[in-house]
Image 1 (cartoon, rainbow, N blue to C red):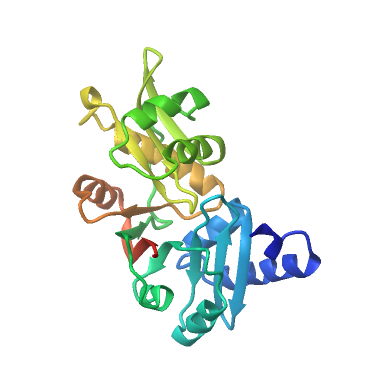
Image 2: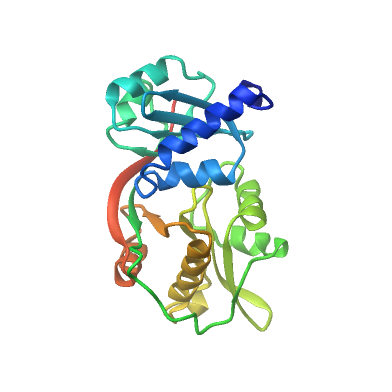
Length: 248
């Protein structure tokens, strides 16, 4: 799909135009904006003030920014049929993208953002970035499965913002940002839980994300009660409900 926009001046102009549109509301559009700024884009289309982009990946996912249903409908009429995965869709956009197709994979989550007014003392723990050798530990203790999980974790350690806490050289807690910049992939080994390590990791990541000029955010599934409570205690506030889907 890279050939759709890559390597031409016209394509770069279109990509820059799309960035200009989503940057008009950087808080609401934080998912798609972070993704566009940090990842190669294989497809972009614009209709009015609405934007759709797809990452240039072996398993590409689309992102949509819009406030106008008619514009989304027109975008979907010319959207590549081979792309069947979408991330961080607002719930009202879902039926316009699905267009009656089945949803074999549907993951809802609430998005919370951290206001600029909320600040923290530096972490008390020694927190440091993850290294490639940490991939095995992270995968072994993941609480969910996903296609190409190893490739995802390797990519996040190589290109995302990461945080790890070690005891005696052993990785005991970790967290990373997703491709859209959200804080996630949080893990703490069983023997080290309820010691405040998740909060320490989050404080570290929040600081790094803010250094990049980004808005700290988390995306919490309904069943993730502990993550939701941690976010609220740290000052995150609800922004919107989103869904991640695969279409068939």
